[in-house]
Length: 357
Image (cartoon, rainbow, N blue to C red):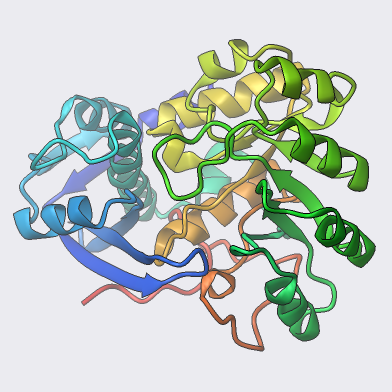
């Protein structure tokens, strides 16, 4: 029996749902908007979080209200198929198909939480896996012009913290050398698969060479391995190249230029419960390691991603630091890595969660 089949027959009853907007300024210098989806039925509530990046799309969803036809009695698998077939956007999304994937996951994760809570079961019980403490790294950009100040400030508060950093062409030899001396970098993100965003980084062979030499043990995420110059620089580094942005399905992993040792599994980017579980199964069967990544979640979505990490890749360099590390000025007193197991007794939740008003 597949993982999805183990969950698909769960009954779920939906009386209705509500939407609750969240907003805060985050460390990458933008105002983050998300929407918590709270599905009601049988006297309990299941939650998910929409992480579509366009504030306009988030506000349009909230203004439209709970208009999706979800009321009724379903099997969870049937409900997921129904959600897949719905157009969940009041208007065409600003950032195309990936936004549709994010929103489908938000509704399906809320449905999963509701179905499990109505059944009185936890996710780990339902799929027969035990959660374990979750190791995490903190994802950062170093600004323009780049400076070590964001890292040094965090290390002062949290000396054992480790990082995944977005490399940019403005990184100088001096900055890279000083950064390497700190010994805190576990992964470098080249962002080569982003287009039309504030984090775009074109292929840069000099940057790739500088980083590969300075951080010989770091994972190299999302480089450009098709451009001749960058491909040549990384020809001997395939063992530590990993992928994030291109991974939306099993087919995307199959289409990579070479089988990776590890890929990033973002539940929101997979767009649904079936493709998420199929990817976990595919990677496990082929010895491909996985790690988790966040989407600047402000509500239950971060905990749900940490919960999945606790089941499938607890010891990996998970880009799933507690949400406080995403703030422009993270405060003292945040949890350290690894996060202790905080899976709730029932449902698909990690840690304490207040129901949205």
